[in-house]
Amino acid sequence: MSDNTFFYHEPWGILSVTSRQQPPSTPFAAQAIPFDEFLASGKLPDGYLTSEYVAQQFVERLVHYILSVPSGSYTMAQLSHLLEQLDPRAQVFFFKRLKETSPDSLKDFAPLYYGFMNEFHSLLFT
Image 1 (cartoon, rainbow, N blue to C red):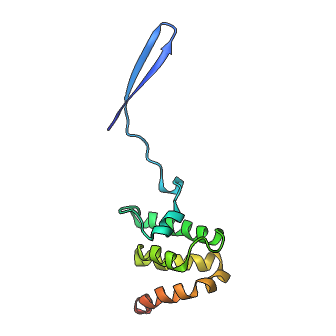
Image 2: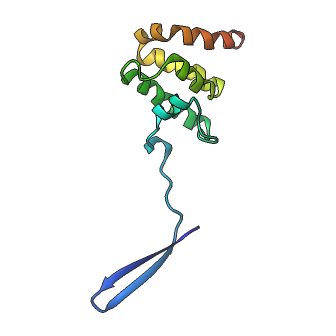
Image 3: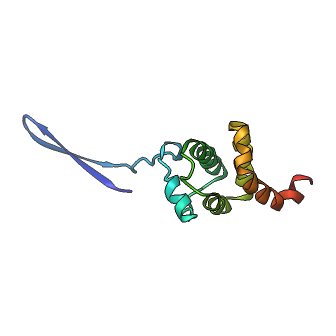
């Protein structure tokens, strides 16, 4: 916990007030995500996706990012390396969201899709 001391200038002098508050953390949904950096490195920082809910938010935003940036901004290999960092459920969720958001774009991601879905074939039909 940190101490924050604020000084107020009043006509009769300076008043100081010390507050013992934890700085508010910015919710994940309000944070900027450096997708270009993550795609370039193929890695997510350790502990970046702290829960399944945060991972789902990340995937939703990743889908919108890859559909909105100009072609050539990333490669399928870069996207594959980034997706490999995700939990298998988040990987499947990525392709589900991609299909729901832009069904026609799925053909552009077919090699990546079939590569990942091949890993989950036994899981999808049990």
